[in-house]
Image (cartoon, rainbow, N blue to C red; front, side):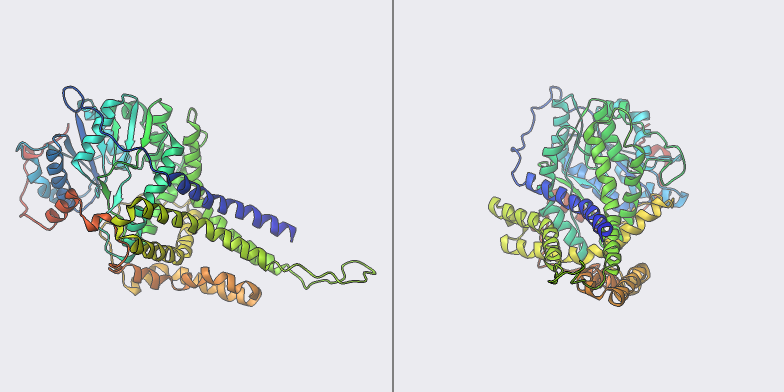
Length: 548
């Protein structure tokens, strides 16, 4: 019993420490940051800046609509950065179609110039694509704004980023907090609401903790070209994937290298006008999470890299722990089950010639206290954020305090249902990586929405069968644990139904975000442009504006 209890305490320490870390960020972020101010304009105008849009087999119509919306927005903001499409799209037919769709962007009509390049050597994926541009054409620019294919950024935000970089020569990277927009499904809208309502507070806490050694999330950020070119050439790791080869989660590594090189890396959640899209169903989220799992666990190779700042090492360790904690939760359930098998009937007279019986302690109250503590770490930060949003008036942009409270409750319940399913996907992902299975880094499948029950069953039947086996085995061998296991087993058994139902459009009465009540101009412009199409035509070499 002592051995099992020791193991359970160790596993609980790891899992609850992870929950406590998130709660601490929320508490630190409850107090707002100082108001955001625009730095004075640089004499001679903003420094030359390129907006980089790396793409790989994306929908070219959607990319074109986003660029057109941002071109209009930067013109309204009085700046004229260059837009550079860095394509890693493969296949002659796809590349030809891509060029034909982008053709109207290449006209020199007085608006911001758009360049295009399709890379033949696709080594290094997105990071390699950006690095290749910096090496070939970086000297023409002082800063680059790095976006994803699904990113949108308001022109005033881009102008603010450039001004901040111009005003502070020590600033190597400035990361915005992207807001998710355009979600339609129940799952997507819940994620969108959580990101809008909670992330602002968590990010303020993170900003206070990180200081000048902030994160880079790979997109919706501005980087100084000099800093990037001097510090961020990424090496190939020795050995084979998943732990060797190309560095997958390159963004955190680049942030660490910038900080090591003496540059300030800042994340500022006060900067608005930065948008992205999110996955519309749980399977798309799990596939993306599988890529992040491999990338984060690969950072085990980098924890001892020379010269890194302490916070950078902590960020690597935190990213690794975010996936190993899934194994810890699973191990805690297994250890609790095995511990129950070692319990024998009570011995009321353990000592010889004992006159009075000794009654065993009822440990139910300890289990209840543990459950209350864990739930408290999950719920109290959200309750505190709801109070903060109501007191500050921020809840009004989410439909008012009553609708915000209902949305927080619904998002919490949905998260609780989905958590065991994601625990299974993350556990499988970690075991795959640790056993040497390379999941690669395939392109994101955007626009994937509603799933049928058959599709969900095909992808999650193994979760259902695992849940059934867990419940039956527990009922047979440790029936006292069945009640405590139900919150985990029932969502696992219902995984295909959960995945299918939450992929459907809905939840219009809750999960309201400010961008729905008052769509930002650049988002509204993109949506209008995305619905328009023009006939395709062939593009000549002379029409292709190239950055090199």
